[in-house]
Amino acid sequence: MDKVKFGLKIIVNLLKESLIIFIYMLMMGIMSFLILMINSTFVKVALLILVILFYLFMCVLLTKSTGEIHFKALVTGNIRRQQENSEDINKYCKTEKEYRFYKGFLIGIIISSLTYILLIIRLFISSNNIDVCLKILNLLYWSLLSVFDNTASIFYLALFTLLNVASCGFGYYLGAKKIMLQQEKLQNIHDEIYGKGK
Image (cartoon, rainbow, N blue to C red; front, side):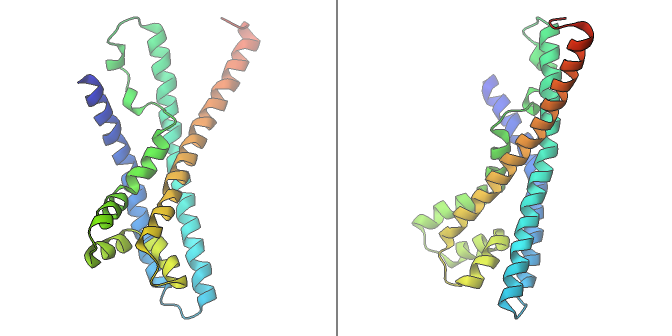
């Protein structure tokens, strides 16, 4: 039961982190839709690619910040666990906010979760309403796809959503790596002054 509660805490925490990126994706989607009104195909494609790249950059930037915060929480938690022998020490450490490698990818999956659910339903039920919902949710990617083929399969969106997962996972790792390197520098300075193992 405790593991279920802990898992739910992690999901709720990651939901909060992914909400901002999800809203950002919808906003970029609206911008992409407006770009479709441009007559020049070359300009249209160039701008749509730039919008997607900017969105992915923001995914990396936002999850990088989360990775930094979570790795700091992990370092703090480890120090507390070393200092305390109590079995209840995890109650005083926000372990659900500590760094874990998979959390960055989970943020990307959560952002794309509605798309995945609708695509699974679409496998069994052919519905224009579902297609419209999928296009609205992924207007950022569908806008570019529609320029080349307006009748393209809706299931191509599953490939585009992998960009969400990859960029969030990468950004989260970068943030953790930054703090990791800072900790190593501090440890090296400590070792130089006081000697190793002290």
